[in-house]
Length: 401
Image (cartoon, rainbow, N blue to C red):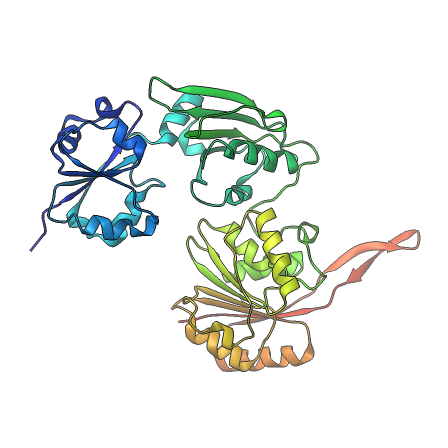
């Protein structure tokens, strides 16, 4: 038996009820109860409906909505309910046959129209209610970004990120209250941004790099100098090969065992949208470095755990990939591989003969790929130049079938 839809999630813009289709307007006018923020309630008209504000904490929202199941209920959101909005969260908790979505033009569509930018050529981001630093990973030469902000202070924060990385000439436009009578526009550049803007705004960025700008591509292999480290880290060329074998994917979770300064976990998170990582590191000083690197390089959601493997792996979410950069042992491998999801990738690096012997044994027992990586860098030798070799790294990788 299919349940009749009882919950309507309605996108509404600055033009309020006038911007709704006749069908959607009728849904709002017939609702017995309407849930939304203060702004949404102001924009909607239905004098007979019970009004409910967003619950606090916000996680209580689903419980609140489920209590309305026998009533004609409407949730009001801004723009498109399924584009960086609460509609997706509701859809994960309430069956699809009980929901009806009523999309409105999103802030991204309105902003791209105001700017004359092709939306297909723009990176669309949100930092609304999320760490602002996560947008750093998207700062690239000639890249255009449209960002849903957290509040009036967000454009200035992002302007500083751009300026600090050599993108101070980037053009910034803040669009506020788009589609309504109070719509405003503010233009400037990152290095001299001084506007005071309304709290409800969308930020458009045309990234312009100076000749000395920091280039931070999302493909793995950032320069070692970009990481704060005590010298114990997976170096650039080996890191690039390591992250490639780990295969970052959208929303996937990495366990970075012996995370050190966090270089592998951070590159994993930068390489794919919404990729997550848990770094297990017993040394407090290295966890502090990893946290600092994560903020600076656009991976602020890196989770860091104080613990010793394999015991620290208990009760963690099952990973899609595991990197063992420290703490390698048969017990650690067994625990990690058992937890790994099907088609999960495990990569382990070794620089000592003892660890290499363990990897050779694991390769014999489980198959996979076993390679040895060594790099040479050109360095001065007196008045001339010669090759200086790094320590060779033995790398074993395997996919769980």
